[in-house]
Image: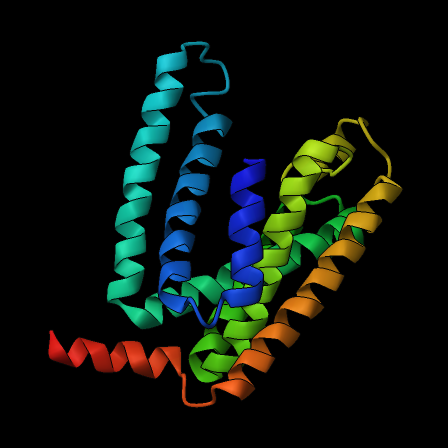
Length: 218
């Protein structure tokens, strides 16, 4: 997970616009796999100790992820929406974990994160190039730093933070998380600046128009 998140995150952060097609395919794979595994381990896998069941679920999740990645490439607007939405979701997770966790509400958590994701996704359809750059820089920086946090430790999981507060396991966010957040912001800024430099150096490269024109020949 560390290697996967670090490599994919770094590439997405700095090359999200240039490598639009492979990026939305990878996003589809990871998105579907993560969602299925999250649901599975929250339900029937939570009390299942059979190893083979976990591997079967993972294999099915990856296959469905490959299908979703293909659909994102086939339907460009859907892929752009999903890519930007995941970037917005990552941004919302950071903000919630840093400041809004005191709401202590599962409903508030999901409303805020999903609402932010939808806003980013819709904006991507209206301001494709700019939102693509910022969303991929956000998503990539989140994935890379999260991968580091898995190994370095003391990176609190935003999906379980509300439950931990309710159970009294923690009462506040570990200050080290804010160091991770600073790393996120620095990498995000470097990522979108690098992508804008690429855009200015090659203004005729429009990934959305290029992919849409390619479809006319098939």
